[in-house]
Image (cartoon, rainbow, N blue to C red; front, side, top):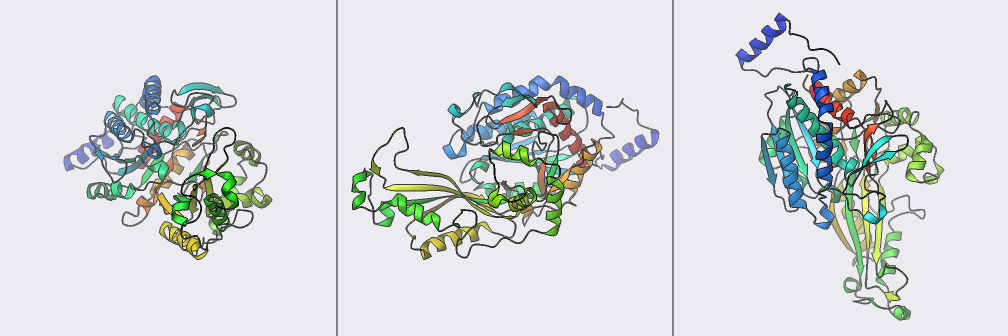
Length: 502
């Protein structure tokens, strides 16, 4: 923090000249009273936390058709309250999205990508109710907020909104203009994100940006930060085997004793699934499947630097595993994580799944599948190969129902969006580590691919974990000075916006 400094006459003269010329005044962190903003963030802590808790209390779950319209309207309200002057809820063929702009009269414009939807949850699996956002002491971390969407992605997004509130309340000039796109289908593969982003008015606004970023909690529990340069693509789908489509097996559930003379759609699905991967389940064997390019020397070097500071033991404990695939060494396991596509079974559903047994022969069985893609692989080509493979192997009757998905995304480490992250982190004494791409996915392709061809990434200090899992949390009060709590995360967004405005 530093005291407010009165502008020197040359600086004042320059400001007057800019005003006379009708040009926007460039504002950087050095020009803003960061101490005043910091005091405001601290004073607004309870209000900001309540804003997050209220948001979590309204779960929008696309897969369950729950609160999608309400979630979009709530997102629009949050944007208006944060200072966006133009806010619209936009309909798509699926769930609605939100488009908003904040004109600060700044020289530069930055894009924001938000999601207002969250994953499904079973309250019985949680130690703290998933919609109550209770503050819980977590040994080694501090006080965390437990709730669905806490870290994925409402916690970091609320911290960005809190940063906008703090800048305004502290009477400081917003350093950049903002363009916000928020969707309600990220958790089902963003099937209609293109209908939002490529609307003429949205695409025109985004063309003026230097890039698009998604708020994130990028610190691990030790305080390390990695700057991620992309993400894998994904396809979400269901494979359905049924007596109706097959023409064999029952058209309704029947007594299991009849298996002696009736075919089983459930076994048919299992046999079809077995053709998609190698014996150990770790190598894709789909005929004609898009090939993944080999990992580059540059990406190998990035991974080598990260694994030196990231704890293998902690990762195994976090994931609850004792071995990596093929018992690979730590570095090679991470190279595989970054560079390899996957075919994963999310769930198998068929027949009776309640307590005890129920002797039925199911007429229908479903495999919920996700396929992760790396740059160079295309979603449509992957789906086409899967369908052709099943047909070639005699399984043309198995339905392939794609619910969502998109291609991978990649951004250069030299992009201004990324370089600004490095500057903010290094100024804080943090040496960030570059990471080639997330193994998880987000629809950054819609920004990085033509016609927009923008930089896209994630940013934000702070820590959280448990996305998609029970007891998801976001750190509010940290006991480790190296790891930022909620207010520290808010200030990281303040600093990033001013850095982008330089």
